[in-house]
Length: 175
Image (cartoon, rainbow, N blue to C red; front, side):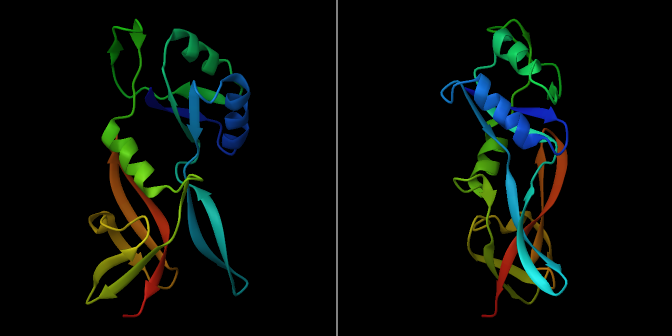
């Protein structure tokens, strides 16, 4: 089974995921809406909110053939299956693009079993960020900026040749 991205109506990701679950067996199609946990301060109170990592997108793992593709295309609120180039599948007989293994492996390493990027505990010494624990452990090279006031780290990486940036929540340790 290969990974693909669906471009869906923004804000309707959970609805589309429900439609996918109703139309496909879990053994035939797995869908994930990656999320990140970040702290937000409103009215002096810090809340821990879950935000979508890629708003308007759902990641699916399936054996994409014409039947599956057409069944997915008929689900409401799905704009299209992401196709970022010309990749002809001789087995399937039509043009499809899959996510590369290194891209999906990177994303899945960050996510917990619920599809959420939890907080990482970091220590900052002389402007050098060391990740002590959490999903960012060993991935310090992806951190571009740390906002100590908001307890967030800005990450940067490439997917399908496009530079992606997003913020994740961190806990700063004073060691």
